[in-house]
Amino acid sequence: MVMENNPILSPSFLPYGFFTLHDYASGMAVCHAAQSAGVLTQQTSRAPFGFLSAPGAAEFMGVPWWQALIRQLEQESGCQYFHVLDCGSSVGHAVMACTLGQKNVILQTDSERMAAVRVLYQTCSGHLFSVRPPSFDLTGPLSAKTHLAAYFMRSYCQ
Picture 1 (cartoon, rainbow, N blue to C red):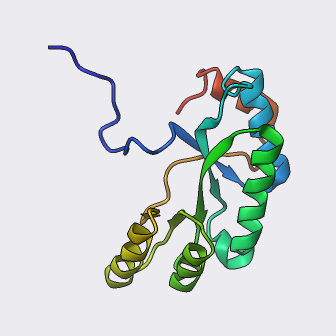
Picture 2 (cartoon, helix red, strand yellow):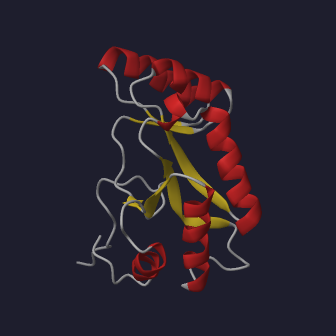
Picture 3 (cartoon, one colour):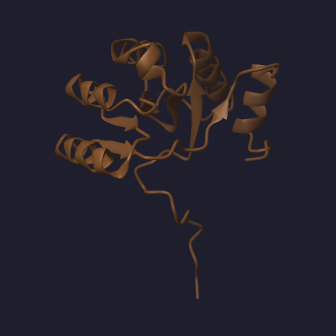
Protein backbone atom coordinates (compact mmCIF):
# COMPACT_ATOMS: atom_id res chain seq x y z
CA MET A 1 0.00 0.00 0.00
CA VAL A 2 1.33 3.44 -0.97
CA MET A 3 0.83 6.23 1.51
CA GLU A 4 1.07 9.95 0.84
CA ASN A 5 2.85 12.22 3.27
CA ASN A 6 -0.06 14.62 3.88
CA PRO A 7 -0.67 16.39 7.17
CA ILE A 8 -3.78 14.92 8.75
CA LEU A 9 -5.00 18.03 10.54
CA SER A 10 -3.99 20.69 8.02
CA PRO A 11 -6.57 21.75 5.42
CA SER A 12 -5.23 21.82 1.87
CA PHE A 13 -5.78 25.58 1.47
CA LEU A 14 -3.26 26.43 4.20
CA PRO A 15 0.34 27.22 3.34
CA TYR A 16 3.04 24.87 4.60
CA GLY A 17 4.06 27.32 7.34
CA PHE A 18 3.42 30.70 8.86
CA PHE A 19 5.58 33.59 10.01
CA THR A 20 4.43 36.00 12.70
CA LEU A 21 4.59 39.44 11.14
CA HIS A 22 5.20 42.36 13.48
CA ASP A 23 6.20 45.04 11.01
CA TYR A 24 7.37 45.77 7.47
CA ALA A 25 11.04 45.03 8.23
CA SER A 26 10.35 41.51 9.51
CA GLY A 27 8.11 40.82 6.51
CA MET A 28 10.80 41.93 4.07
CA ALA A 29 13.38 39.84 5.93
CA VAL A 30 11.19 36.77 5.37
CA CYS A 31 10.70 37.66 1.67
CA HIS A 32 14.44 38.21 1.08
CA ALA A 33 15.35 34.96 2.84
CA ALA A 34 12.74 33.07 0.80
CA GLN A 35 14.11 34.57 -2.42
CA SER A 36 17.70 33.69 -1.44
CA ALA A 37 16.62 30.11 -0.72
CA GLY A 38 14.82 29.86 -4.07
CA VAL A 39 11.40 29.52 -2.42
CA LEU A 40 10.18 32.76 -4.03
CA THR A 41 11.14 33.32 -7.65
CA GLN A 42 10.01 35.67 -10.41
CA GLN A 43 7.48 33.01 -11.46
CA THR A 44 5.98 32.58 -7.97
CA SER A 45 2.56 34.20 -7.92
CA ARG A 46 1.47 32.83 -4.52
CA ALA A 47 3.94 32.20 -1.72
CA PRO A 48 4.02 28.70 -0.22
CA PHE A 49 4.10 30.26 3.26
CA GLY A 50 1.81 32.72 4.99
CA PHE A 51 1.80 35.49 7.55
CA LEU A 52 0.04 35.78 10.91
CA SER A 53 -0.30 39.08 12.68
CA ALA A 54 0.98 39.46 16.21
CA PRO A 55 -1.45 38.11 18.82
CA GLY A 56 -4.40 40.49 19.19
CA ALA A 57 -3.05 42.90 16.53
CA ALA A 58 -6.53 43.82 15.30
CA GLU A 59 -7.23 45.34 18.70
CA PHE A 60 -4.11 47.48 18.98
CA MET A 61 -3.06 48.11 15.35
CA GLY A 62 -6.31 47.79 13.46
CA VAL A 63 -7.56 46.08 10.34
CA PRO A 64 -6.51 48.83 7.86
CA TRP A 65 -2.93 48.73 9.20
CA TRP A 66 -2.72 44.96 8.66
CA GLN A 67 -4.17 45.15 5.16
CA ALA A 68 -1.83 48.02 4.19
CA LEU A 69 1.17 46.08 5.53
CA ILE A 70 0.26 42.96 3.54
CA ARG A 71 -0.49 45.02 0.42
CA GLN A 72 2.94 46.69 0.64
CA LEU A 73 4.72 43.33 1.08
CA GLU A 74 2.84 41.89 -1.91
CA GLN A 75 3.77 44.87 -4.08
CA GLU A 76 7.43 44.73 -3.07
CA SER A 77 7.81 40.97 -3.49
CA GLY A 78 5.52 40.55 -6.50
CA CYS A 79 3.53 37.65 -5.05
CA GLN A 80 0.47 37.09 -2.89
CA TYR A 81 0.43 35.75 0.66
CA PHE A 82 -2.11 33.82 2.66
CA HIS A 83 -2.48 36.07 5.70
CA VAL A 84 -4.40 35.88 8.95
CA LEU A 85 -5.25 38.74 11.30
CA ASP A 86 -5.40 37.87 15.00
CA CYS A 87 -8.44 39.52 16.60
CA GLY A 88 -7.82 38.11 20.07
CA SER A 89 -11.18 37.76 21.80
CA SER A 90 -12.78 40.76 20.09
CA VAL A 91 -15.85 39.71 18.13
CA GLY A 92 -16.29 43.33 17.03
CA HIS A 93 -12.85 43.44 15.43
CA ALA A 94 -13.45 40.10 13.70
CA VAL A 95 -16.75 41.34 12.24
CA MET A 96 -15.20 44.67 11.22
CA ALA A 97 -12.31 42.81 9.57
CA CYS A 98 -14.76 40.80 7.46
CA THR A 99 -16.65 43.93 6.39
CA LEU A 100 -13.32 45.47 5.34
CA GLY A 101 -12.48 42.45 3.17
CA GLN A 102 -10.18 40.49 5.49
CA LYS A 103 -10.71 36.83 4.53
CA ASN A 104 -8.91 35.07 7.38
CA VAL A 105 -8.90 35.88 11.09
CA ILE A 106 -8.16 34.27 14.42
CA LEU A 107 -10.82 34.71 17.08
CA GLN A 108 -10.74 33.13 20.52
CA THR A 109 -14.13 33.49 22.17
CA ASP A 110 -16.99 31.38 23.49
CA SER A 111 -18.68 28.84 21.22
CA GLU A 112 -21.92 30.78 20.70
CA ARG A 113 -20.17 33.91 19.48
CA MET A 114 -17.74 31.82 17.47
CA ALA A 115 -20.61 30.08 15.67
CA ALA A 116 -22.21 33.39 14.68
CA VAL A 117 -18.95 34.86 13.38
CA ARG A 118 -18.10 31.61 11.57
CA VAL A 119 -21.33 31.90 9.56
CA LEU A 120 -20.33 35.42 8.55
CA TYR A 121 -16.90 34.27 7.35
CA GLN A 122 -18.35 31.31 5.50
CA THR A 123 -20.72 33.59 3.56
CA CYS A 124 -17.72 35.77 2.63
CA SER A 125 -15.63 32.72 1.57
CA GLY A 126 -13.24 33.36 4.42
CA HIS A 127 -11.87 31.25 7.23
CA LEU A 128 -12.19 31.74 10.97
CA PHE A 129 -9.47 30.15 13.09
CA SER A 130 -10.39 29.36 16.68
CA VAL A 131 -6.78 28.50 17.53
CA ARG A 132 -3.66 30.34 16.51
CA PRO A 133 -1.68 28.18 14.04
CA PRO A 134 1.97 27.50 14.85
CA SER A 135 4.27 30.11 13.38
CA PHE A 136 7.91 31.09 13.15
CA ASP A 137 8.32 34.30 15.17
CA LEU A 138 11.31 36.57 14.60
CA THR A 139 11.40 38.29 17.95
CA GLY A 140 13.93 38.34 20.72
CA PRO A 141 17.66 37.89 20.32
CA LEU A 142 17.40 35.75 17.18
CA SER A 143 19.49 36.67 14.17
CA ALA A 144 16.79 36.97 11.52
CA LYS A 145 19.01 36.22 8.51
CA THR A 146 20.60 33.12 10.03
CA HIS A 147 17.37 31.64 11.35
CA LEU A 148 15.38 32.41 8.20
CA ALA A 149 18.02 30.84 5.99
CA ALA A 150 17.98 27.71 8.16
CA TYR A 151 14.17 27.61 8.05
CA PHE A 152 13.97 27.78 4.26
CA MET A 153 16.79 25.28 3.82
CA ARG A 154 14.77 22.89 6.04
CA SER A 155 17.57 22.54 8.56
CA TYR A 156 15.61 24.30 11.30
CA CYS A 157 13.59 22.24 13.78
CA GLN A 158 9.89 22.59 13.00
